[in-house]
Image 1 (cartoon, rainbow, N blue to C red):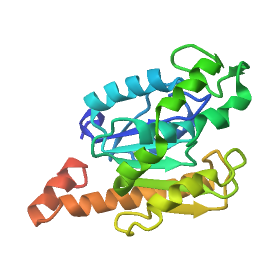
Image 2 (image 1 turned 90 degrees about the horizontal axis):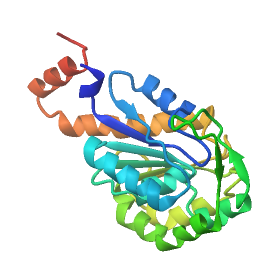
Image 3 (image 1 turned 45 degrees about the horizontal axis):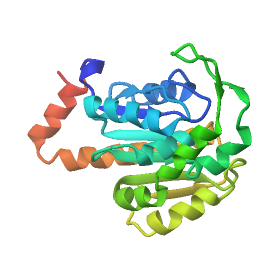
Image 4 (image 1 turned 135 degrees about the horizontal axis):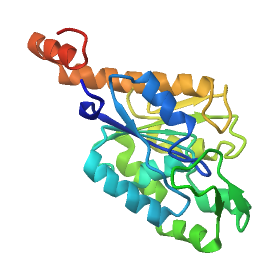
Amino acid sequence: MKESELPVMMYIHGFRSGANGSKRHQLQEHFHNEFQVIAPEVDADPEKSLEKLNEIIAIEQPSIIVGTSLGGWMTLMCDSDDAELVVVNPCLYPKETLSQWKDEELEYFCQRLDGIQTYTLTQEILDKYDRYNITEAIKDKSQRTYALCSTHDELLGISHINTLKPYLSYLPYVKARHLTIVDDFGHRCICAGMDHLFNILDDIIGQRIVRIIRTKEEMLKWMREIGLIE
């Protein structure tokens, strides 16, 4: 199957990152021949970024959206239709968390596709976050939200865990655990963090396949589509 014919997984990067960061490449490598992984490039302006994301979602119709850090907030706030949402150490209160870098000229951690390599976070941008209600978004999308949170997050502490627990911890373990709490990585999703993320995504994808494939004919059709048989 051509890559353009594969189902779409969208990755939304975090603050000071870009579409060319390592996460998209790692996701595409892991889900080679299963998903086409796309990664829109956004910045810290929630209004502008969500508008861009919603336009892309309407066109690409991703079945899974993954977001890390600030990208986790955007994952929860975007118009995601019925996509499964996976957030890793989501920065749920961006105004408070990011204000420490206000008015600083910050360099991006990777080479941006838009050619912009510095960013200045203004009070005007921070104030835009007041327009959004993250707890309502979590509540409304809890049945299709899966969170991976670290207790050793040096940026968020455990505030993200405390916010998510009331909405996710009670949900049944059907596709994957809705709230996975670990202590073997920090804020950035690297090394053990990526292993946990892959496990969660594999569980979700496996359950989707089970739900879709109900007959022998459907199984053979699916195996042909992914190139297992001719």
